[in-house]
Amino acid sequence: MEINKENRKWLDSMGLSHPIVIAGPCSAETEEQVLKTAHELKNTDTNVFRAGIWKPRTRPGGFEGVGAIGLPWLQKVKEETGMLVTTEVGNANHVELALKHGIDILWIGARTTVNPFVTQEIAEALKGVDIPVLVKNPVNPDLALWLGAVERFQTAGISQLGVIHRGFSTYNSLHYRNKPLWHLAIELKKEFPNLPLILDPSHICGRRDTILDVSQTALDLNFDGFMIETHIDPDNAWSDAAQQITPNQLNKITADLRIRKENSNEEEFQRKLNMHRKELDLIDSNILEILSDRMGISKEIGKLKHEENVAILQSRRWSDILLKMVEGGNEKGLSKEFVEEVFKAIHVESINIQHKVK
Ligand code: PEP
Ligand code: MN
Image 1 (cartoon, rainbow, N blue to C red):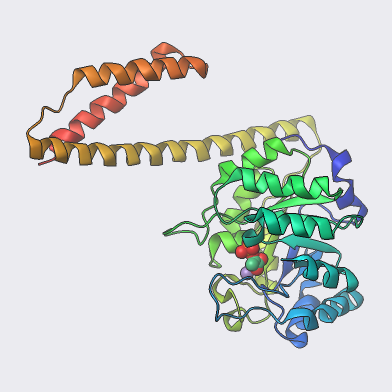
Image 2 (tube, helix red, strand yellow):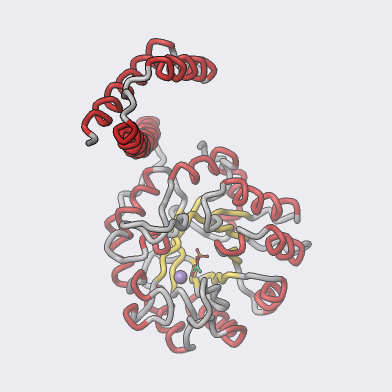
């Protein structure tokens, strides 16, 4: 996850400092709302103004965006505040209109990245135009789709590329609107170490009170910036009201973030250490989740055995599992002793759980 500054030149050439802050409403609603929000954001760390002009709503009936009449409002934001402007494009026609109105950066939404036909159509519409493009992850946790979309833009000759992590939808999640599944962003970063990686905590959290926490995790993981939905009157926003914050609240969040410095060797060492520790923390919580899922299944098996009056300890099956795991571990560079130790502990717990089932 080394930063290769050469390939990030487009950020510098656009005057985008670390961390990049992209802020603005989920949707452009009226000219007044757009301009008022932009003027308030001018006094924050925001360096790019965002607003959705065409809104991909999952179900019809919601607000689907003002459409092309909103593009001149973004031009006005640029003229009046000097901030760069960005909007989402979902087809070739959007690209043409956005380019005609001097939009500085385009972003590809999660519902577009998921569709290789549409992504390809947009990439082709951009041939010969070297405008920065930020690719959001697809709605589903499929790393290949995300990588594939990035590759389509690279092939079309877009050299100023970045990615946005906005979380992945799940059937049911208590804490998140879209689960962060950080390991996917970490994997993407490994494949494309030179692409700026931006966090969209708004769509991950779906609420205001957890934005700071999720943003800090991203900074600790060496993300390059944020896209945060910001509105002058969040409660009355026409889309995504629950997660939008005011420019003042944005100020508070960026002030509270612990932002790393990249100077001395010691700071660099600390930064890397913290980043790897954060990665370990995330993997450890995944291990816990997987273990608890495994024990849930053991419980089901326990019930079945109880109903059928079958012995709980099936030593033949157990030796088969252990052998397979030792072999698999060996291929992955894990020692026999370690794998045996771990799986014996899992087995003992599983047997205990099955004994408790009545
Ligand atoms: C948005 O940024 O408002 C948006 C629609 O995001 P996503 O594509 O991540 O759902
Ligand atoms: Mn939104």
